[in-house]
Image (cartoon, rainbow, N blue to C red; front, side, top):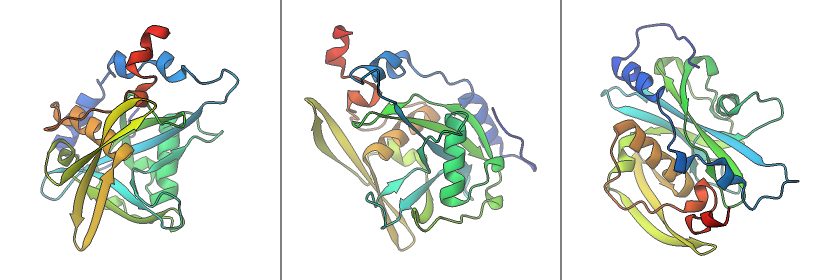
Length: 236
C-alpha cells in the first residue's frame, strides 16, 4: 500500500508505519450491517474519505495536518483534508489523496499510506473512511491551499487528543442517543483554532491507536457513528 519516498526516513515514523500496517479494526466498530441498517436498498450510499497525514516535527514529536475551512463554505471549521468519493476514484485511499491534493496541494507521491481504520457514519448516512498516511519528507511539502475551500493549513500533535488539557465537552443527543461532543483549543502563533465534534472524534480514535492508550477523559461517543445504536442491535 505504501509508496516509496527518497531520502533517509525517521526511525520513529518507520516504526509507527510498521505497527499501523498491522492494524485491524475491532469487529464492533467495523460492522457493515450496522451501517446499512435503516438506509433504503434503493439509495445510493454516500461515501467520503479523510486523510490523517502524519509527520515528525522539529522536536521529534508526531504531528498531524489539519485545515481551517474557507469562510465561503457553510462549515467554517477545522477539518481533516478530504471529501466525497467521486465516480473515477478507485477506492477510499484514492479519494483521500485526491482531495488532499486539491485542497492543500499535497502530492500523493509524498504520502506513504499505511492503513485505513474503521469507517464512521454521519447522522446524514454518509460513510466517512479515515485513511492514515506518513509524510516522511515534510520539507518537500509546501502547502498551496485552494482558497475556495481552505483558509489555512496547520498541524497539531495528535497526542493532545488524549489529554484533558484545553478541552471541554457538551452533552448532545440524536434520536435518543446521548453522547459527548468534545472541543479542543489549539494555539499556533497568533492564531487560535478549535477542533471539535466529528474531526475531534476521529483524532481521539487515531491517537488511541498511535499511543496504544485510552484518553484521559470519558469519551462517550455516539453509537450511530459506527452504525445503528447499540439498543437496536437485537432488531437486526
